[in-house]
Figure: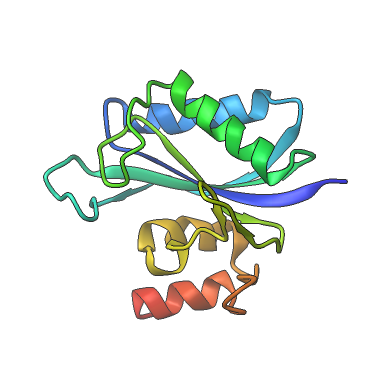
Length: 155
């Protein structure tokens, strides 16, 4: 059975757009998922550690047969292949891939929380996600992505 999931991608080191493109291509190369939608790439300021380059961010919709754990392992593998050497929360990175939503599942593991616990307060996540998943409902908050985005951005 296919599960629909949404991923957030970000890069702020080197050829940022190219890292996003490469990550999406690596997702497309997986025989266990299909990339169905990709948002526009948006340039954003860093949060937290402001003494670092701007990011390019995007959101991706996939359909997959992978479990949430297998999908998480795949994202870590892609990050490593693309030169991610730090998993620090606020550190600069070649690529960051986060699972935002995995159907309407709620996961609270030590190393993986779905829905992503910060997605509803981050414009750099909500702006691209609202382009491809405006009507998707957050399984805990009960609001659509569009509603969360409009509240966060003030529109």
